[in-house]
Image 1 (cartoon, one colour):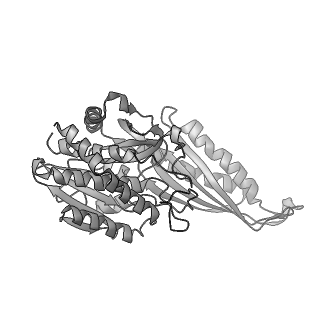
Image 2 (cartoon, rainbow, N blue to C red):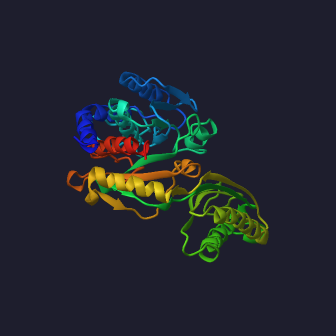
Image 3 (tube, helix red, strand yellow):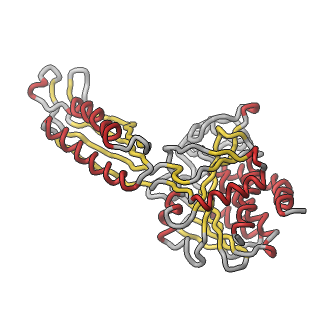
Length: 394
């Protein structure tokens, strides 16, 4: 049999076990930086496979090394869950209140475990080493990837390149998607307090109305995108939360709190936009006599898929799945901390189809009804193993 046939056969052979791993993880989710039981579960499965070169990083991250040879290739899966109460009725629904694998990290983790089990069977034939990275805290700043990199995950040995996959409900099960170059946006968090002078709403002339300031400011800030950003470079500036301290129909509050996000695909423009946001806030507040407190938390960078690496991984995916099951993807303004790896070494981050309209499995990620067609685990585990098998030698 060809390696393609061998790996596909092994993915089918181990499917029930991979499925059981996914369901266990789904029932026992843990939030970012709290994945202690998840890490222990991963370590136990790796030990059962006979993979002994395993270490903890960033407290709840698990990194394993297998194979032999001069070249090292890395595979990454994130392991944390989201603060969402699951509303599905499946037997494997989350058992933890207000915590759910609503972004598919249970799928990523079980797929990487499955790839590890397949590769362990083929270890004698591997012409290099495979570094398995089970990464914590993708969902929370500063991002587990940034911490692992600081702790040396891309050293000793240094991977020549890295791949990661992510569930994608709009893509039918059995398919995968790729995009070369800039793929996902940077993501920064904006925390802003506007401080005015509150009082009786019937006497606005005696006050500094922070509501008026905020109204003007939100509209003014949008001109940074419409008039300063390159129209060919997508950028988003959105505010998703506005709260006041006090206030009523006849009471103007003293303070307004805002929270928002800024996203783009260019690191130079990103820094320039931060300065323009600061300048705009200062100008508008000064005009109305208000003061402010502004905190822009710098988040994940844009995710860049190395063109040569992505082309090779896409070609391997076509070999493994067939051309009809490999699609091209558009840019997207969501963010991923896998981006940190992509700014360090050649990287390829691709999408794993998990949707099935016939079965009613269509809910987006980050929703309380998210689920997958578990047949996706066959591709999730098998393709990662296939990529690693060839990328350690070519």
